[in-house]
Image (cartoon, rainbow, N blue to C red):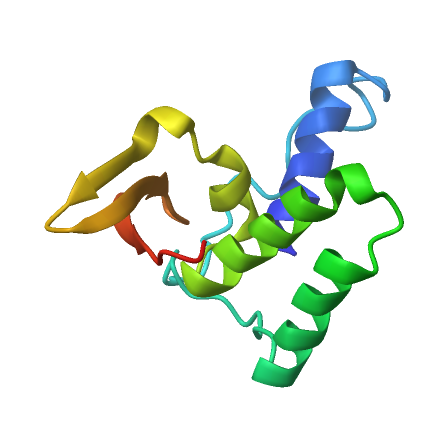
Length: 123
């Protein structure tokens, strides 16, 4: 919430929506933000049953057959590689590899770090 308010005031100052007499500084500039783990998230994942339903729907009941397989593979990758959607969509073919008998994929995770994930054969 602090970040959103600060960004709003920053936008107002940069775009000069209000005259300088009405607002000449960001009131959130001096606010100390609480210490938070940048890798923490409250987001809950799908249950096993929800995942199975989603994967089946993507593979067999997708309205557009041309994109059904692509959607299905994306869902498999998200679930079995434990990826966030931004990491999956940011993955590049050049980052595919092979190590110790396993296909691998190097992806950038939350926080900006790069990790190598083992790709199961069925993905």
